[in-house]
Length: 162
Image (tube, rainbow, N blue to C red; front, side, top):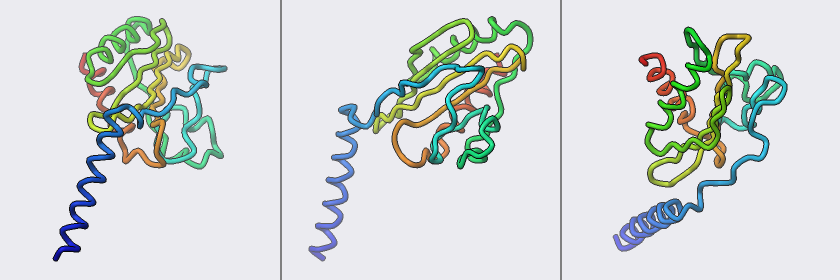
């Protein structure tokens, strides 16, 4: 019985330590240096299942292409107005910081509530396709447990409502 109590106490202490490490910002990771649009492409999906990209099909041999595949954001009317509307939406989201805002590109950082993991999210106005391309990726971890996909779909739903 004492061994069981010690095991539970150990698990609780480890969980508290992980939360403390997160709250101190030690799980946020480093901002990638290669974000942005290059030759009409956002950065490729991550090599592990922790990102989504509307441009995943541009990388046919990528090991996470199927996992990462997500539709771009559609819009009607003026692309610049759509990007401005998207920026306003993102600025209103909890734990989301707009880092770069340009007429055709947005880069935001999203932070999880408890452990303070940071994800990098990019949006690029693809005028020729009349869509907004998107990429959302976790900085740390081999899996995102579907968080990036859920985030993009939540943004899509709110964007389409406005």
